[in-house]
Length: 294
Image (cartoon, rainbow, N blue to C red; front, side, top):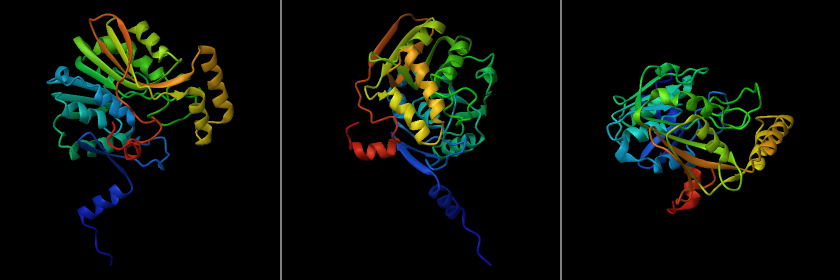
């Protein structure tokens, strides 16, 4: 009779089929890239590092915070560690909730982060009637053909902005009077920057808006060509997306963070003074090739 494995051996076996990434001074477990089901828990990429680098820690100390789209929990953990008093996190992916729960416990934050079920149709309905000092999100942003099944963490309409549009529509109702919102995403734009995100923000938001973009942008059409190469969409679907992008004047995809303050005014678009590797390369792999130059 084969002896039962010890809890430590079971944990080691689980971690062997997962990806453990160190970001700042904490670790997060995610799926490996070879897990390709719709409920993949996305590995850690430079976008999460950009978000954490852009956190205004003085302003979120003691905050009641909300994350829209928890994923692995990497950002909720970072916000809690930065001083938020309580973080509520919305998520629709059961595997992500399980994985994030593990990461939250592993980082000693189970009393300060609570996970609640998200709503795939009305993003903010689970927290209707509540207000938060700080709301944040790393939303789905992959350009996606109509009616195409895709990863929970990625599908976002023809320009990758549909989920953001849904957040902006209800943001005023859940932010406290002087509340703040921070978003990290990849957004389509021209040679000057992510103009479509700026236009969407101007359309929905009345306060102060600042968009900070990494200079490590991608050619939008080359990025779309990777999708059929990865077996995600057909060539015909990809060409449809390209046609829509050309009509809209899109040239590049920008990794960027948007800061919004309710009650302020004005729009500022600027560049990050930090250097980030390609958004297509996982953070641990990118860091191995970057040395200490971040």
